[in-house]
Image (tube, rainbow, N blue to C red):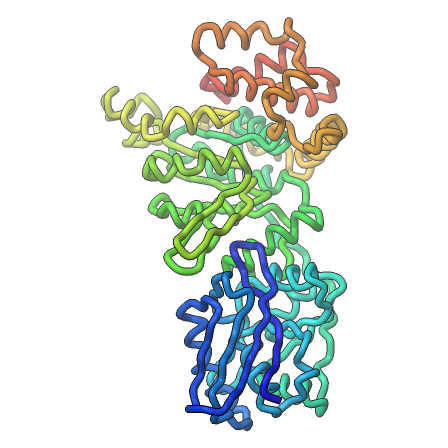
Length: 506
């Protein structure tokens, strides 16, 4: 037979599309023509496939070979097409039966010795294959555990191209992979480790309960990083849909932890302040990869020493934080990644960052203003909670010898508050107070006017924007949910306003 086809999957972000791989052999000068918008990696796959076929013991057909990747208008990127190309060539050459390869979805990179190597993005690729109606996929043995997360799809792990040839020829069938029990998630830092800082602990609890963004300021050693690192431990474990979404993003990024095929805990991303815009949001000159914001989907993005980040880089977070997704466009195409993450910023009060506080500060007022102005007003206006953490005193340290509340205790209150919010917002398709649009908040869940008196005066004096007033009301609802109240009262609004406007002392 001179015509054969197999199937593979091409990715654009975390969205996959099934790609038909067709191989036609005809008389003429021996050579290979590859069509269908392949990138450089896909074009180079011809040489990898030829060497792998020969080193497996099969013969490479000395004919004119035309390989088509359909849909032709979709850019093809990455090395995951190697296995499908090899199977289609061997089927067209008659080395394996053509009907055995037709209908199979094959993913994997080939080594020159015929070994099948793991690739990125297997989980979203198998999800796309299942949605397209395919029920059997062949993947590298190193990706079998990840691929087996998709229900209803038979996963055939292949260690070498020879194993696939034997399977297609009927000599030795590949056994479907049976997934074992998932390993227990790695332990997370406990909130009980934090000494003192009652206001910081309260702010982290409120942020976890309502999904609010948080800004922590204070001298070095005050506990900003410790509080931020313990926020994921207060969040509920991801449900199945959210876990698959997060795992798919990390699979595309190549950041899945070894031995952890499914990420069931909210992720925590903490990029260095030298990170570029592409590293923070996503991008790349070739394949578009998700940035730290996207990898923190359903989790926490922590920016330590936030004023040290370039201001333009920080401002790119504004729109994605509002929309919950980011679209990155390049000349070759565009990719959309979900990025509904909680942003936590941490900053010192001034450039000198004296641990002794203002008494030992050597910065002039102008230097302090310039340092704080590195965070733009529009970005800070999107931060619901702002807390100033003082240095931990000796008295607070001695009082902290008694164990404070552990993460499990606070997480239980957070779970109850989230359940109350979900019951109230479920009819609108929302789950968290931070997700409620301002107009819907005012129309369906208004805070009583007497309770809003203090916030309205702040709006009148110019201390709050209209967006800020809406955010104060969202935080007030979260405080009411934590307190078990059906409607926020004046104390809830006052506390929410204080967390937004004032420097709260512990």
